[in-house]
Length: 320
Image 1 (cartoon, helix red, strand yellow):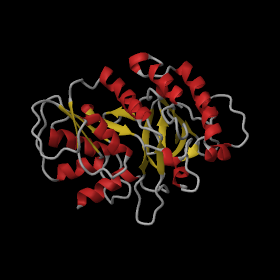
Image 2 (tube, helix red, strand yellow; image 1 turned 180 degrees about the vertical axis):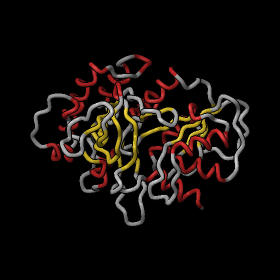
Image 3 (spheres, helix red, strand yellow; image 1 turned 180 degrees about the horizontal axis):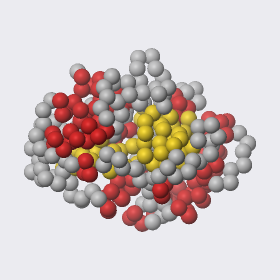
Image 4 (spheres, helix red, strand yellow; image 1 turned 60 degrees about the vertical axis):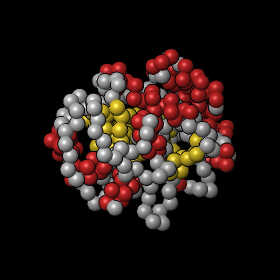
């Protein structure tokens, strides 16, 4: 496990990116490792011939909600910690256990770095809004990126990257705001399901410019989930989420399971090499359109899916 972490971190030096031609071999090695040490995954897969990373069986995200069969390659008593999905009273919460958080931190830096290289300026002060649930992977990410807790009243003396859930920003806008310094950016992590609130993405992004002075082209959407370690980023109202350095996304036909063509719509399956201690392949209930170069445009959740927790936690917290 440690060797895999070191190999990934050193694969392309400071870029921390996995080339397409290397991804297949690394994914198959990690699949063999997880088949050996993850009993729940081994039972799920059974005997199958795997001829490439796209054929690696993906567990549904709901598999992380079975306390009797934790999705882990090590005894969970040895975990440094875990992230937990939010839920309503009585709802079983999913848990993603981590032997340590080293690889998770590597994945956060790797996922954000392409933005810094091609769009996002360096040197921005990173601040995040309150309203993220305890034991939240999102909260861990935001605190790691900012190096501090959630922001309260602040008077920035230069451009900032202000981060938070879509509902956190909505509460901020409704409470009254002023424009941030010129050159500031925002990162929203999306989602209204289960909150009894709804605002279209164009309307939300218009409010970033109206209330904070941040044009839509400087607003990022972060896509991640408790069951993953990597994140995917899109820019602007109609932006596609770019391929993450340590992960790949496949949009599959819901009936055949085959990958759809560019421009077509299906369910999102994610393959994350940073998920060393759990499973690298996770099937979501998110609907997406396949884009060029491994990108995708998120269209929403399956209406039958359980509401995702981070936005719901934000709404419950901020409503208080």
